[in-house]
Image: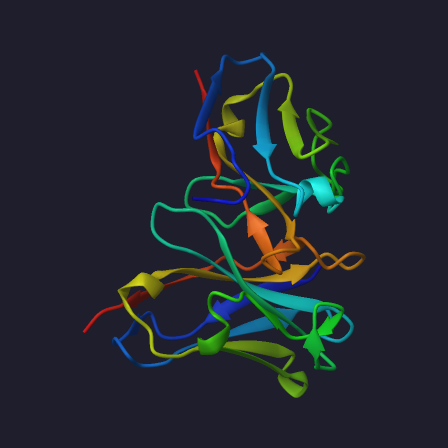
Length: 125
Length: 111
């Protein structure tokens, strides 16, 4: 049973970089697409981006980012640790949210079948 | 404002049937992209409820069903139970925005 667990600082200062890691247990990170999704307090869900283990840049494979966040987002994979990570630069209060990591649907990659429990990140000085 | 439009809230009594609509456009649902549904219980992460428009993952009761037609999709819940009280989100892909998109969410209240 694959499980995901997010980790990282719960408080980030404005203009700094938010860094989170998602640990994948119970299965390999290889051959799947992995996403980050966030949810501001009391609001809906926003997809941030996904990454595939082998890497490249396209919807059909590799990394793909939400255009609204693309200039500030970097996703990466650490195969040796079975983890993937999110970096979001130049954060503001608008980036305050619960951040979820998730596995994309294995067959179509356009939905999410496994989610982490989420981690709350507050942007404040 | 979300690209996929859901009613903010729906309600029903135990045992009743409720439906939640998800209205999109020709660049997402109408373009043939799949719709998925998620259930988010209070204080928890979303859980996949329906995938590929009408398929239930293992463990999801058959009280939950999904359908899609034209530029819209629907989630139906029959035999409503107190534990169904949650937020429900539809999700698809939009080819004009090149982004995986969510509806704004619908809060289900069991009366």
